[in-house]
Picture 1 (cartoon, one colour):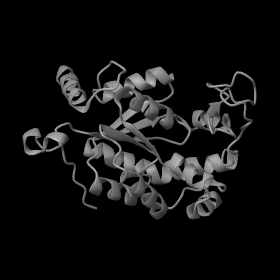
Picture 2: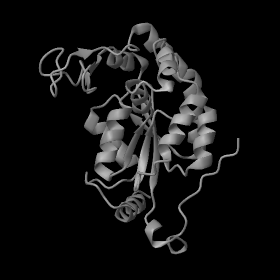
Picture 3: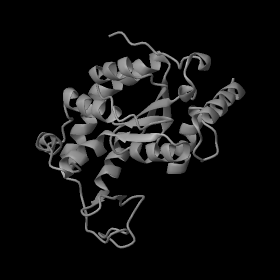
Length: 255
C-alpha cells in the first residue's frame, strides 16, 4: 500500500478562496472511550465539522434506507460493518464538502483497506488516539442510554438525566442500545484490538499519531488533545488563517 502525506500547497500558488489551510483529523479508540464527545468539543471550539460514521448509519436506520436492514443485522450481533459498506457511506458524506475549516472523522478508518482509501483521497493532518483500558470502556458502554424520541445520548456513570429513565430535553423514555449488551461489547473490543491496533502502530511510524489518556475528565482530555495538536487555547471558532497562524506559533514555542 502506497500512502503519501502531503501538506497544503504554498499560499501564493493557490486561489484566494483557498488561501486558508484546512485541518483534517481522525479520532480513534475503542467504542465507548469518548470519541464522539471529544470530536464535538474540538468542532465547537475550532469550527471543524464532526463526521461521525455511527451517526451516518443511525440516519440510514431512522430513515429506513436500503442500507438500514443490512446495518441492523450486523450491529445487533455486535459485529463491525464491512469495509466496503463503511467506505461507501464515508465517501458520500465527504462529498458534501461542508467542512470549510476542516473536519474530525469519528469511527473511520477501522482497517487497512479503509486507511488506504482515506489517505489516497484526503490530506490527513493527524490521528488522535484516545487510550483507555477495556474494563473502563466496558463499564461506560454498559451505562449508555439513548432517548427513544429525540436520540439524545446519556450515560449513567457521568451524564445522568435529571429524572431516571426520562430525557431532560423532550421527556422521552431512555433505552439501552440494542448492541450494548455484554457479549456484543466484548465482540467489538476484540475486533478493535485485532483490526485497529495494528493501524495505530502504522500511524505512529508515519509520525501522525497523537495518543491521549482518555481515563481523565472530559475537560482534561480535551485540553490534552488541544495541546498535542498545537491548537490555540482559546475555545472559540477561528477562521482557518488565524488557526493556522496560532497553531504554527504553538509548535514553535514547544520546539
